[in-house]
Length: 58
Image 1: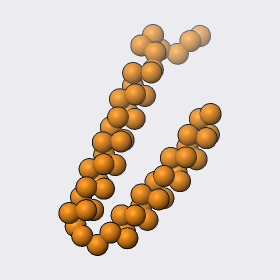
Image 2 (image 1 turned 180 degrees about the horizontal axis):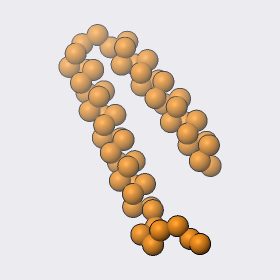
Image 3 (image 1 turned 90 degrees about the vertical axis):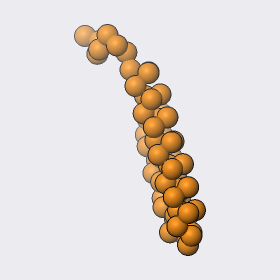
């Protein structure tokens, strides 16, 4: 499942990059950047919450 997530994120990243460079207006590029930051921050928060506070199992 982790490999699938990595592959999906790679494809989404490439598509976001393509859209970013296709957009001409700076204001719209800023909206794309803000959206990407929000998505990354929410993923980091979800990942941090899913990590066990007890540490790795022995």
